[in-house]
Image (cartoon, rainbow, N blue to C red):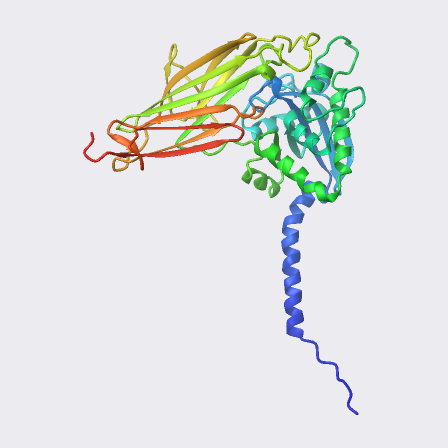
Length: 446
């Protein structure tokens, strides 16, 4: 009779499995630890969330109409404060008047803290303002606009929100929000309360979604961040570079061969005319044989008036048949020189670019075009070949601005692979756009 003897354990294989498990654990930790810090697992984290209103456009996306302060601890929301941003400004003013707080350079503190199209710059200003108001320094700042909310409402379906008889959908969301926030019939009514109730209902509906639909939510948030309807900036040294790599922090890119950003600021009248004002960009570059280039930019505005909206604006004094009156900043490569119209500008550099300043006024039911011309910095001519590259920056808060580019090469040249001297492209600025074209000298030409 023979007995079965257990085989000796394969210690080498066990060690390999253990090492593999440790490596997997380290990999998971390298991903989870940064998120753990941001979610409050390594200590409470406070985030300032600002709601931007692109109907009243600002360089960073829109007027800061409402805010929320969220404190996370161990991945859970432990406190939530929200309100009208103007209320915080009033609190700050009272603290300054009493001598409790020193005055900031910019006032009102929160609603006017950010004037930069570079969101990290604006986010730091917003965080600084909130710290002066509430003695709490946010760990991060998140900006959202209605387009981001509409993408999520599209997922959860029609919602019934307290104080509104009509179901809220992604199509009517903006109109319903304006109906509640822009009606001034009752001065005692909290006009912004509907925005908070809508946000709470949306969050509740998202939490009840089955796991099979979580990917839809992530995709909607990712799309909103790609289109700069969500912008995020924080102090986390590990997470923030990841956000920056995706372009979700709203920071300006490094200088390129040619660069264009048209940044509107509708602040003079404090109205919501951007809701009914469309913009188109036409950009033409003529390159000389020595590489010097002249850029001609035409910005066309159309104010459709409020008569064609799906809701009445009769009780909305800051929207009803409003004139669009805005400062326009044109960001061009550093060293660009103003040519026309009018007297030569003496711009100061900002964000590594030259900035030209204009102003536009567009009454209801009218069109207006603004054309400017400037000389771009000299470009390199390499053996008769000229490479041209343009990066066009989309302004946060805008959506799908039509853009036309026409580049004309030097006499005696042609677009590589063609017999044409002119190259053109059309796109919309749903996101940032990049264009490239190369011109080569025609044999025996010039």
